[in-house]
Amino acid sequence: MANKLEESNIAPVGNAGLVEGSSSEKQPEVAPATNTSEKGNDFGETDKKVDDAAAAVSDLSLTDKEKATLANKEEENATGSTSAAPPTYTATDAVQPTTGPVWPETSSDHPLTKFYSSFEALVTEAEYDEVYGIKLSTSSPFHTKLILQKFLRANQNDVEKAKQQLLETLKWRKEFNPVKAANETFSKGRFGGLGYVLEVEGVPGSENKKDIVTFNIYGAVKDKKATFGDLEGFLRWRVGLMEKSVLKLNLPAATTPIPNFSEGPDPYQGYQIHDYLQVSFLRQDPAVKAATQKTIETLGRYYPETLSRKFFVNVPVIMGWVYTAVKLVVAKETAKKFTVLSYGNELVGELGKGVPKVYGGEKEDLESVAEGMTLA
Image (cartoon, rainbow, N blue to C red; front, top):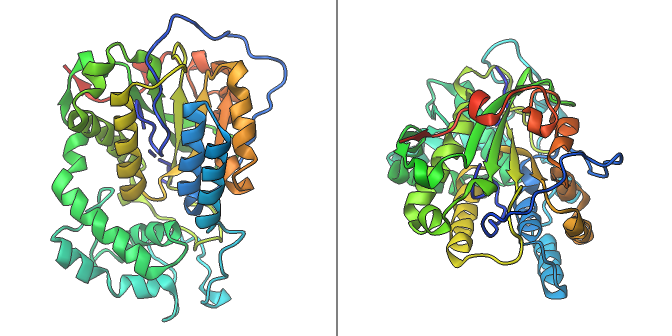
């Protein structure tokens, strides 16, 4: 089953900053008649630029200096499909859908062919072979290539960069053990109500029967010191939630190849929701900021090609100018990948009726219909 994943909860998965804790102010529950949010569906090559833009949105301030910083990052990392050099392999190498777990043949100069011929050395060096629930092995060529293709797309078909990122990911997964983190029990007092993973059917524009949506509920934080004070403990919870959402993609059961870089969307990605209802945007606690930065660094490096789109909901209307400002300094492809919604019930227009009623859909509350981390 070709499901989509991503990156995540109290600290945005995919790399958005966290904001100050709860406030007593609530956003209106009825959306205005006009919805000005943009829709789009880009993929891995713009993830880093999305993270830069998302950080600006979550900080909800954009000085001239910050605009310049974002603009510089955009220029330095302009590796999207509109500016990337065309692939060097032939047109006959284009990936075509198959009816079973068989990857189409690729020529000797194809990036995937080169990567596949060298991945075993990386596994040996890292002394670890698992990524997203798949064991990299020549005895499982289809699913191994599925993972390798994600790393290639994240690095615009640069084989050497993809190899380096995969090696770092294998070493990190061996040390951190995110699969174990996904099944550990965490403190209900620290993390209760902060993160959920939900399977949603009927997402507009999606070819998947079901898509994976991760909800980050920032307003659920009751004690910032308790939640974020222990940075390593928080990161373990956050990575566990991320890993749980990735495992929901069920990549070991995948039968459709991922298209080559710039030749189509990756069907094995997920959506991220960052809900700011009852959250103050006045200032950011140092502990929250540290947790945000560490989460961005970790998820951005070790979970490539796992985010389809990111939504910021219940953002005060008065702060809508930030989104407009960010759009002026990032590429169009990047802007399409994140959307700011001032009202929670606008989300139904983006993800369909499979979301909870509080977001305009037909399902019950997240606690009833979604899966969270094990808490005690």
